[in-house]
Picture 1 (cartoon, rainbow, N blue to C red):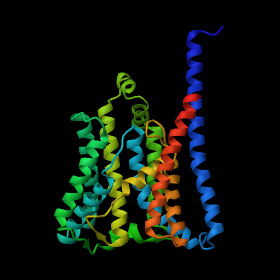
Picture 2 (picture 1 turned 30 degrees about the horizontal axis):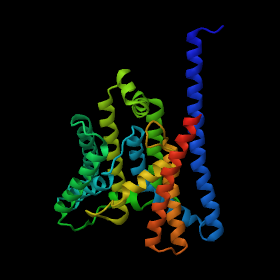
Picture 3 (picture 1 turned 60 degrees about the vertical axis):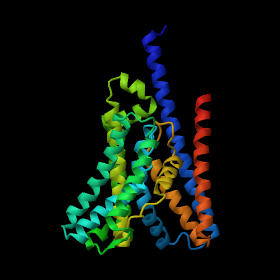
Picture 4 (picture 1 turned 60 degrees about the horizontal axis):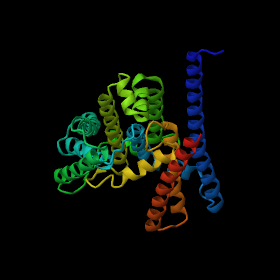
Length: 333
């Protein structure tokens, strides 16, 4: 007969195997959705599969991909970051003031942009962990308004344009036929994949999202993990802002409006759960590409901006509903 220890070991092994299977099906589900969307749009509009259009989709998906991978970090801990759009705006405004207005070296401006985003994220994390607010919805919603207001005040509600070529490069340049911004996305996603799957902190993030109290009892510094998570979210929002500023050659205080909804949609479509502990970077990338493909396809079909907004809203509701169904099925199993 098996000992009690061996039985527990087998159960733990089965649970881990079931988790891996659920994660695989989650990724395959979003990938299948992307393939179906590609097939439908290639049938409906003949120009969809043109190489130029596909590279345009890659370019369009870059900003949301970067913001979404930061959002994934927060959702993995059963949290959320509603300030990413405003963080993007304020970070790029800081860079524009330093580089364009004060003629500071653009490298320093880029670093200031990324540091500003990280600091805003750190404040979000500290508000959550030190003030013990009931949910990050509260702290990040407040920070959303603070950052947007500061961006408007700092610029007198006017855009700042005229960046040097080094800042414009990532947003507008191509390496061969591939947008430099999308190559940056792939590099960032590889780094985050390694971080989440190969480092103790990455495993702690999943553990905190799975059961915060159990993680704390096992010796994990939950507060530190949460601060790191929100710093990463702020950093990625700022990096997305860097790409946007390079593309349009300007920083403007109203940049990033509704970016949080696109990022959340990409994460959930990619197989993550609002309940935390479930999600992958590659699923999130697929979700971001699905969002870009959908927008691109609607543009090619001549759908008005108003109806595109309706369609995106329906996709977000549908993605959340799929998450609800997925959790019910897992609960039965």
